Image (cartoon, rainbow over all chains, first blue to last red; front, side, top):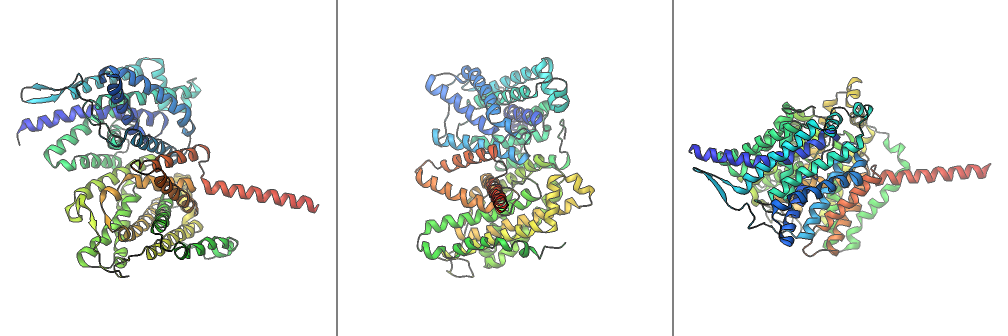
Length: 288
Length: 338
């Protein structure tokens, strides 16, 4: 086994890890601010990938062009999801809120199954077709662009959380909802915005995934579980932890698959996931 | 721990519950040779038993578990492997599968029960996924090909019959036994401890309840129950594989059924399975033909509406309604007497 092979797997891992990171950030911010485990997160991803595919099929829009459109739509979806459904479950017992998001997930997943049929869809001939070659390594252009867009999106999100007033209010609400409320933060509005951010992250990830991955109704669950693993590693509720976790999970998955046994690549991920919960439930950067 | 022996006394009034049971006993004679209807009944019984298993650990002890389908699979695989390798009857395999399942529940629980609510829930999901991937690649247990039940019999020894009627009675018995277990737990001291853990774990600990012992107890009983169902399920469907048995959707379905019926009650899972499963099957027949997603969409919609408007579930809803009617009639009677 030569080092180039390992390095190639490492590069693949970092590239795919960027996607996991972006999905995980959306999951983690909703978990951190509201304490809700969003089981429908993967299915929102599926839906955004389908949006990108629909724009491509019926309007001829390249995923790169439809990206802002899909994100805008998904921010609205996030608002609606909170306003009409999830608002009711903010203070509900965990089992109730989990089952609520799970039923949303089922409706979306099997709704997509009925509407779009179980076929695997692929967006062909987009701008990002082909590969970049660096010496003996190669990176698919789509994955590379995804990685860059992921970094841009995360920088945007971090500066939003760090420097704007709303961002500060979001962090305050995540730290202590009651204190934030007593300091005059409109918690209801913060929850609304958080859902918007969560789904915007997933929309970026979903649109970019559609450039190099099949789009099909059942794609959500595997990404959801990987995002869970990333969040568990980085720390539940921590945003930069989710980014770190996502990239590590991507590397572990690709290296494990390349070096040990391809069919077991996800086993390594879930073993890390469960070990993390056993011995360090707050993750590397999170709070418990 | 005293298991309430006097529970028959306080529930003598509820003797009417035996009536639907008696009615169920004669169902095969009325339905006769209608395999599909019997199949729906059997699936209802399977989900009642699995629902009670989940109800015990999550409804009573409050530990949200998404790995019930894994314990179910352990039961199915253990007895079937024994049958295939050493020609052992599933009736004995049943009592091998249950301790194995309970043992793994013990190992898992003792490592994970320090986690709070949703952390435990996602940890059981991680466990379930690991198990699914392991079984998918484990040659010894047939990997992704799965295992087929050897077609010997029909005989009681191999638990194989050509008719569905014997299976009907077996699964009916399983549903009744699991409901009885939950019934006994519900009225026992252990049940009280479970509920106190669910409501306030630290408080329960301060009152001197060994919370980790009782959580493990609930988890192990639950796992053994699910394994028992799995053993007979394998004999019934004659073919098991990780893809269908270890699907997270099975656990999700169990959770939704119990939540629909009323979580943490004895009759909730019964009611939930008896309503939701036939409804899903009906939807599948009516809207079948390629679009097999309708039953899940319907489940999703129903459960979303239930948790939105009546999160306590249908059983408690009905119970409250009946109680309020009873109270009203009592008041009316009192007034008329005056």
